[in-house]
Amino acid sequence: MRSLPALAALGALALAVGCATAPPAPSADTAAAPPGFGTGATPEYDAAAVRALAVTDADLAPGWHVTLMQPGQNDISSPPETADVPACQPVLDALTPSKGAAGPLAEADLDIARAGDGPAALYTAILAFRPGRAVAVHTGLDRVLEHCRAFTSTAGRHRLARVDTPTPEGADAATAFTLTDETGGTTIAQRALVARSGDVLAVFTTLDATGRPAPEPDRGVVRAQLAKLKAR
Image 1 (cartoon, rainbow, N blue to C red):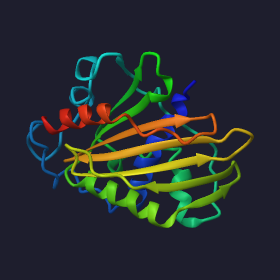
Image 2: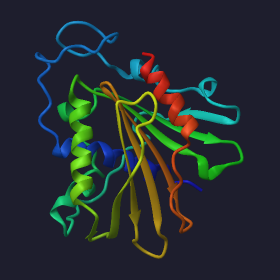
Image 3: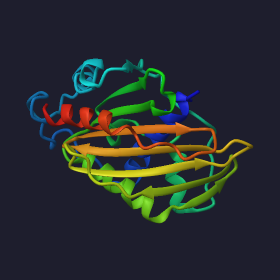
């Protein structure tokens, strides 16, 4: 059985490590509005606009089902922890996702599952940012992955590894990585693909708790979601 909180935590990690190492967000009075999402000085990505960017059952192959998670359903919190490797501290900080100007303007969280194929299921987060902010967050994520490989905290030992991946069709850039939690008797492996399309990040996450590597996010789902973002 999948753990949605665990999947959500990895999505939060992708966002928070990027925000923690990215330059400050531009002020609202200097940011231009994204095309098609409001006019004037302040971008107007809102919950409804971002939900409209998310795939539905009709966008996917037969057998796939998309569930829109309710706001707050993926919130994760934990006591503060300290990593023994300073470069890895943003990974632990990610358990309390960034809010305010550094974070997204709006977000939609999806649980995407295929009938009879539990391991293929994935958690997907669609994150809309102020102009230029998605690039900075994605660059920050790459920076953390360059310097953080393994670390220990009070909760246990973790391994973080970048996965070579081509940039999928429809994305401007993409980064893939795995996070393995070796705490306790069960090794939990998570895998994420973070794809940027303009000012939107799409984070696709899978999980395995059976001792095997987490599977690659389904390419058909990734392709369908990025096509919808590109068409906006």
